[in-house]
Length: 465
Picture 1: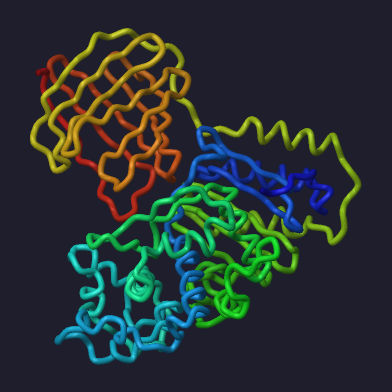
Picture 2 (picture 1 turned 90 degrees about the horizontal axis):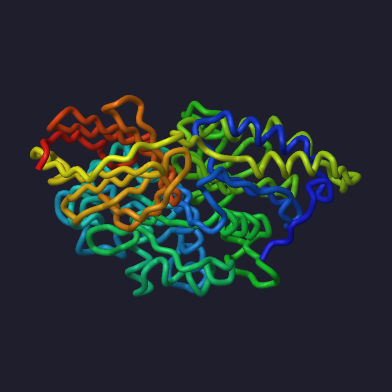
């Protein structure tokens, strides 16, 4: 759906993009990028095993999609920005709630100014009814007084939209936004009541994310059709509330309606571990990025350092040599792969000791090219295939709501220790499984590169069955 051109045709030197890619490659775990100028793809790349067709978990970048749904519902006359939230949740706003909850408006939810002094999810996720728990969570300020980042507020927007539309957030957005932008069938994580969480849990491919960002750049218009009201998007992406108490330079220049303001008059939706839909109006450019990073400011710093100053208002002369070098560099992008040669071992089965994860059995077998590790747990057996010196693919679920595709490699680090490195290429997560065999006994250690609303696994131990 997007036109591809040489970078120079869009006024961006290939050499500048190559420097940006080289700098990104030095960070924790970059996954993909797509750079658009004047609506055309100037450059794109994926670090293997991440790939163009695989949707990626967006974390809090999901909030920007929820915001668009609010704008659409406003346009349809279903809500007003200054409507009190309590109007939509009379049963959930029970006795014991802070009286100031009745002052809270939809605008306060959008601007993260609900009056909480911390994210309300701390009080919500252990409850069956998240909306009721939101109102029971203590307020420290009057609504509208202070910005405090609060994913619970975005959940309330999703729950409110479900109540007034009678449809799930995904079903509401599909004909209005997602289908016109060419999104595939996408799922969204839900609360115990089956309501999309709104503030995280949505998935998109890199190109879908880039199309979304381009639509934002165009004031909600996509190929002649106004998908999101322009007046709402103008408000949503503008300074609505002060957030200068934050430390990082691109987290303290203002917040809109579930969008962050940036330096250089840019704005963005973003999500944990480096998911970005960055919109640069002065350059008529957008940048979609997925990754597994701990320091999100670093990525924006690289954009401001390498891409922004290199952008020319007019097309540049063709530079086939530089464009060729960039293409070769992008073709080589990959995350680390373990191992060289494997070792043939017969199937071994172990009964696991009682553990918090509820895992009961571990099975392992290995050939010269690949190995197979199976864990039986509360949801049945899950198998990871791993290649020696290459990746093998599996689909696993473990403790997530949805199955995820995993690409894994392995190596024997000594006679008794096997390490498996598995990338869940629908998410930022990479896990390192270290399996130690000691005669009749086994120990399996699980190390995740990142954690978010989940606990690390305990070390699993057991003996041969």
